[in-house]
Length: 134
Image (cartoon, rainbow, N blue to C red; front, side, top):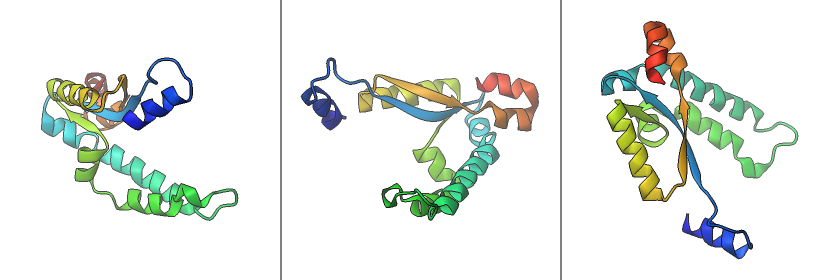
């Protein structure tokens, strides 16, 4: 963050250069529900993206710097515990608020863009689940 903001100023831009984190978020009444309800949806999405990246690795117009084969393989191999630890925020409303606040303060972010995953709730617990996940 420090390097980015120094480069921002050095380039002659005004202000400090805003930084936002985009992260999938899932909220439920209990930590267990927040962990389990989106599992199928999230893992399906990661496998889909991983497969698409791996398949496109040798496509015309791709650049080696994109590391599509490596990134695709990593997404295909990731386990759900790693997803929860490193790639998304799940929990009760209080736990999610605490985690978002911690990340914002620790990283010096200007804000967080939450990607909500209500589709998983609607598949497992009906429309009411989708509404509560928001």
